[in-house]
Image (cartoon, rainbow, N blue to C red):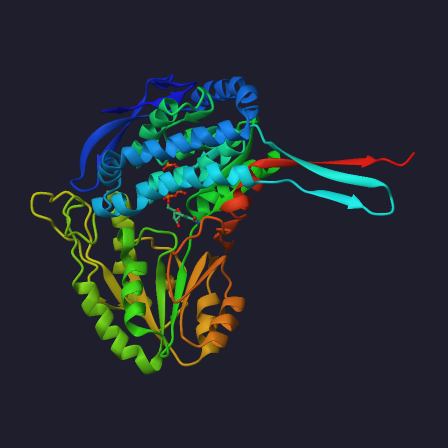
Length: 481
Ligand code: NDP
C-alpha cells in the first residue's frame, strides 16, 4: 500500500519519489509506505490551492454547506472501513475508533456545515454621528492545518471542516505516524463534490514538509495541534511572518476528587479519563488528587479496576487498551515509569511491557498507577501521554487548587464534588481552558476549546474556529449631507 499526496484533485507521488515506512502498532510490522514530501511538493500544493481559491470562496454558503454535509454522510457510510483503517494505523481499539473517532469526524463536517449558515458578521451604528460600521468576514485564502497521531481523523477534520466552511483552501498535513485515514478522507472529499485544489493533503516529516508549510509565504494562517515543543518551533517560524496562529498543545490535566462526590460515577469516569485511547488523549486526567478521607478507599478500588482492564489486540472486542502508537513512544513512556523510584514514586500496578501471543512485536503496556508524595516530581510536571497516572492525597480545597495549578500546562481539569459552591469556586480559579465538573470529555462542538499557559494559544470550536479562519474588515460609512 502506498499513501501518496493529494494535490489538485489527484493522488500523486512526491516529486523526489522518496518514501517513509509506516508500521502497524498492533504487531510492529511494516504495512505501508508514505510520501516523504518536501518544499517542492508544498509549492505545487500552494499553486493548486491558489487556482482553486477564487471559485471556492465565491461558492454560496448553501453550496459549501451542502458539500460539507455530503462529506459527513460519506464518512458515515464508510464507518466500518475507516474505523478499521484508524485502528490498524494507530493501535487504538477498533471499538473505540468505530464509536468515537470516525463518528466524531463525520460530526465535525456536519457541525460546520450547519455553523457556517448561522455565522454572521457585526454592524455598529455610531448614534448621533450619522455613521454606520459593518464588518466583513472573508476567508483568509490558503491556510495550513497540521494534526497529531493520537486522534488522527477526529483532529484532522476538526481543523479542515471549519477552514473549508469559511471558504479557504487548505494545505493539510497529518502525522507521519498515522497518515492513513487522512488519505482516505482526501478521496472521500473529491467524490463528495469538493472542487480539486481546495483540499490538498501533504504527507511526510514534520521537520521537512511540516516546516515548509509553516514557512510558506502564501500560507497565511496555521492551525496546529501537537506537542508544546513543536508548537514553540512553529510559533518561532510563523510569528515573524505575521501569520495567524492557533496552537492546541500538550496537557498535564488534574482530577480533583472530593469526599462528597458521586463515588461510583467518579470511579468509572476516572478510569476512562485515565486510560482511554491508551492514555494518549491531550484531555486525559493524568494527575489524580484525592481528598485524604477517601484516599485509601479510592486507591484500592481504582487499582483493582485498572488491573481488570484488558490489554489486547485492537480488533478484539474484549480489548480495553490497545497498542501504543509507536515503538519510540512506548520507550518514552517506559522511561518515565522507570524513573518512578528516583522521583519518589511507588508503582501500584502495571507499567510493564505486555506480550500478546501472536503479536509479540506489538507495542503493548500494562496500564500503570503510581503513588507519589510530591507534585514537583517529573512524573507530575512533564507530559507522559500514555497509560500512566499518578495518585496523591490532599487535605483542603486550597491545597487541591494549588496542586492543580502548580504545573506549566493548562488544558483541562476535572472536579468531582456535589458541593455547588466549591465546584464554582474551583472552576473560577483553575488555570485551564476547560473545566469539567462531575464529568469528563463531554463535548458540545459550539464551545470554545483550547488551553492556557503552555497548552496553547487561541481557541477552536464553534464560531471561534470560524473567526480564526476568516479575516475581519471593518467598513465605516458616514451618511450625513
Ligand atoms: P508533534 O508535535 O510531534 O506533531 C504534531 C504534528 O506536527 C505532526 O503532524 C508532526 O509531523 C508535525 N510537526 C512536527 N514538527 C513540525 C515542524 N517543525 N513544523 C511543522 N509541523 C511539524 O505531536 P504528536 O504527533 O507527538 O502528538 C502528541 C502531542 O499532541 C501531545 O503533546 C498532545 O498533548 C498534543 N495534543 C494536543 C491536543 C490539544 O487539543 N491541545 C489534542 C491532541 C494532542 P510528524 O508526525 O511527521 O513529525
